[in-house]
Image (cartoon, rainbow, N blue to C red; front, top):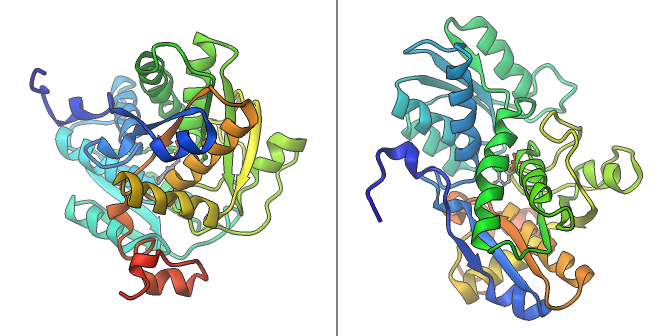
Length: 330
Ligand code: PMP
């Protein structure tokens, strides 16, 4: 392997790993795309780089300018590292409910962090609207707008989908993941369908999100809630428009957490809850398609980002979630 030319060249081209437990449980071959292997340790590095390069190509940003974004954290981390590598500043607006580790990581990267109370999208104080306002009030600033900027999903059409197709040597029957912006699901879905229209694309939706209802019966409606960070969408973002979704699953936190635990204890993979929900969805898709099928999903980010939450017994108990046996005495 030749050395990468710079940090940004390390984004993408992530490994694909066969997930032993999920494969054995279903009689299928289930693979996880290791997005935690990106330099910012999440899938969102891809969208961040694509959004910054798109702004540059359009002449929207000048040297020394600022990228402003509202994010659950991972896009902010991706943007901050891309901005550092290219000489820009970042202002990141984040709901105060997100993990402490993400806040500390953003501060460590030099991002200016603005924490806002969690609020519904209809509230002008919602983190997305706050970030747009800050961008408008800041000179030489660009609002990254990851939800409705389709430079986000383009990164997954040209990157993630192509990589999965090549890594699986064109032998793939299904793909599933959850949705935050929808960039990953729509981008990988469109990219894989262009290669083979028979690849089944499935949404794995957490509780509290409205997309399961939308794809099942055409209406956006949510029920319940989830502690998963970075996923759970209530509207059809521009990135989601035209997403080729064939089927959908609703996945509870305990079901996702069970796979997070098994992958950690039996395969040594330390992941966040959106990855657990994705793997739970891949297992459901495998059961729906039948034995012998080949299915891919996304391992979105590292579990080291959630040591104070998903891997903390007190936090799990406070949320009413079951505690991993080996954490129970901690
Ligand atoms: N998992 C995590 C941990 C995330 O931060 C995100 C991004 N918000 C996603 C999944 C969903 O990715 P996308 O925005 O492409 O739908």
